[in-house]
Amino acid sequence: MIRRALPWLIAAAFLAPASATARPVEWGASYTADALGVVDGGVDRDAALMARADLWADVDGAALDVPSLTIHVDVMATHGPDFSGKAVGDFQTVSNVQAETRPHVYEAWAQWRASPAFAFKAGQIDLNSEFDVQEIGSLFLNSAHGIGPDFSQSGLNGPSIFPMTASAVVALIGREKGVQARFGVFDAVAGAHHDPRLPAVRLPGTTGALLVGEVEVPVGSGQFQLGAWTYTTRFDAIVPGKPRVRSQGAYALVEGPLRGALSGWARVGLADARANPVAASLSGGLALDVKDVRFGLAIAQVRAGGPLRRTLFPLERTRHAETAIELTMAHNLAGWISVQPDLQYIVHPGWDPGLHNALVMGLRVALVWPTAG
Image (cartoon, rainbow, N blue to C red; front, side):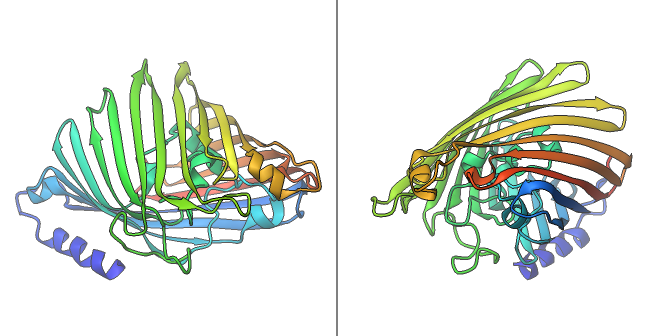
């Protein structure tokens, strides 16, 4: 797939009209590394380094006399162990760059904006770039503050999100500062059937489809999102021997500025507990901007569904909820580098009554080119 994408970008760069005032291709790269350690509780007092690297290119249709067209390609690589699974034991995952994949084309899509109120996108698409986007929550390391755990748990290999995407078509209706509606059809399986670490290119719906819809409504200077999702295929039930069931759910999110430099958000999500471990999730938090430093406090809770509690630890009293509390501080040292000390406290990791609450400490270093701002 990389070999297919690169000729497109090279041709666009050199075939741009001489009168173009903008560069037809913009390049960029980023590298985000988390050094984290369990200092108390959890599965094991261990430390690890996890990281994600991206190299991306955007083709500007305006510079090619096709102003309605945008093309985006992102090649990604990750490294590091399964820190949450081996050291913390939590379900929500303390680092949102933790993944076991091989270098691959993460996104490759084209978007056609037919009018100011309608756009159409097709290709390999990160679902979380269009749906269930938590802008303020992106400050935090815990994966629960990206796409909600009620949604990210779904599917055979997970939905079309980090670290592996699927083919999709997405339609956007509505103007930028008004009410917007998004609809997406994603292939039901992200990555290869035989190995989820490997990418796969299929037409949307080849293995069944994940259908997603979302409405975004402005609320003052903030926004309110309401979304729902369902798979056309059926999955094995959590309880062995039960009939296969449909995986589906819904979520609601409100976020925006509160007062001065303080902003916040709150989110709730539900999923069918017959097919998914998590029946409900609740999260929220605050962020405060002070010059080049951003402080954040967040909490995320996932509640295990009844079917999971009855089968996961049948001889013990299973915890009903896992709660992650995170305190963080991101300091922008320069336009190209930021450092972020981080502290997380996980209550009832993995709903396991045999695990003590985990205290996780660490540091994120993020590099970006071209420089921010």
